[in-house]
Length: 440
Ligand code: S3P
Image (cartoon, rainbow, N blue to C red; front, side):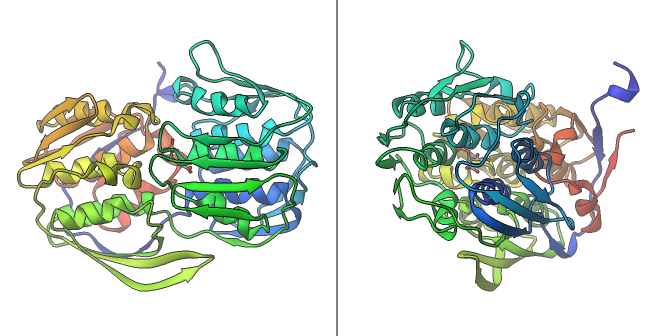
């Protein structure tokens, strides 16, 4: 491979105390959904705090390809000229979701109701991820949707005369599957009901309500009736807890640190890591708690604290589904063993995250054992070495945090996808006092 095409890499070193007051990028889940609903609404919506990441830009670009005018007057701002529920136009080729599983699964629901055919494709990582979990339930609504033979992308949708509402019980706790069905339900006859084995983030339900669609929702169940309309509204997107999690753990594990992360969304189905870190001994305070756009947000004030390993309650896993990589770093710095079980879903994220973290920690000399549905991490010292991110943004950022307390230099290979969720993470870590540079 020529240098020009080599995947970017980072080298980290041991950091002094981390400090400062920091903002984190806009919430990824909400940014995707805000663009989608604004595009399907009647009227003009303004989105502030939009995540300028490759994933959410891919979603916006897809709606632009279907005739939606989307202005970007400033970073983090989008003005979306909604075309109404039936106003999208056929795109002139396949729709590329890049690395974004949320984009592909939620779009499957939206595109199910269109009067034109579409094909959704993704990058190498997304092309390996399971799509039958949305294609199967959507088929029961009458959607004509096909995956490739092994249930992975591309997703091919053909128009059908009518969609029927269904009462579906999800096999896995997945906000993406729930959302795909609810979005198809906008176009269906009758009621669509989605029941979950454990409650997941309810952003789709809440944003639909904000755009004027009546939804009956309670933890673990959502019901809506097709044939209503979405009315434009302005959306203020809070800081992404999943992005905040990296500096949160970094300040917890680097001795002498004390910093503030401003304006972080604290949705209860997203903040399992807060409870787990506190149970391990972390010192994290929520200041200036307020409600914004129906979401509780706060400034997180975190100080270094010694951690002890714990058995992570299985019930906490869905509430920290994206935070496992950085939890594994906290566990590697804790005294004693941290045991994660019941986390099979982590094998089908942007990478197999149980495997990726186990490989990386082992490469840095940490005592780690991968189990079918989890890991056992014996805390201690993180050593020097080279790790592969497997092209996964959160694995790369987690090891950048681990590198701040390692005994020597840690090289992290293939970090380009960090731009999907946290462009500028490297600069943010340096601003806080961290040690990280491009490997060149
Ligand atoms: C998301 C749901 C979760 C999460 C992903 C974002 C969403 O995925 O891992 O990063 O925005 O709905 P699953 O629904 O597959 O658990």
